[in-house]
Length: 174
Image (cartoon, rainbow, N blue to C red):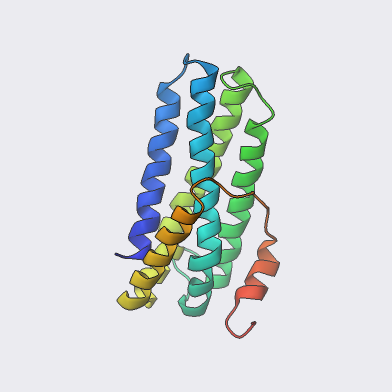
C-alpha cells in the first residue's frame, strides 16, 4: 500500500462520481442530492486527509516537481485549490438539486477539482514518489485510509490560509 496510490485511487473515484452524476440528468432531485452528498463528503474528507497527512510530509521531503520550484509552491497551490473546491461546493448548496443553476455549480466543482487533481498528480505526487521511502509511503497510506474511514460521515469544510498552512507545517515549525 502506497499513499500515492491511495490518492490516485481517490482521484479515480471522484472522477467516476462526477461521471455518474452527469449520467443522472433528469433523475429525481432527491436522487441527485443523495449522490451529490456522497461526492461532496468524499471531496472534503480527501482534502482534509491530504492536509493532515500528506502535505506536511511533502514539505519535509519534496524538492519541487512538475513545474513547481519547491514543495512549498506545490503545497501552497494545493491548499489554494482545496479552498476553491470548497467554495464551489458551497455554491452548489445554494441551488435546488437538478436545476440549471445546480448543474452549472456542479460543473464548476468538477472543473476546479479536475484541475487540482491534474496538478497534484504532476507535482506533489511525483515529488513524493521520488523522495519518500516505501516505509513512509505505506505508513501514510494506512493513516490516510484510517482518517477517511473515521470521517466517512463527513466533516465541516473550512478554508485554510495557504501561506499560514505552509508556515505552520514546514519542518522545524512545531
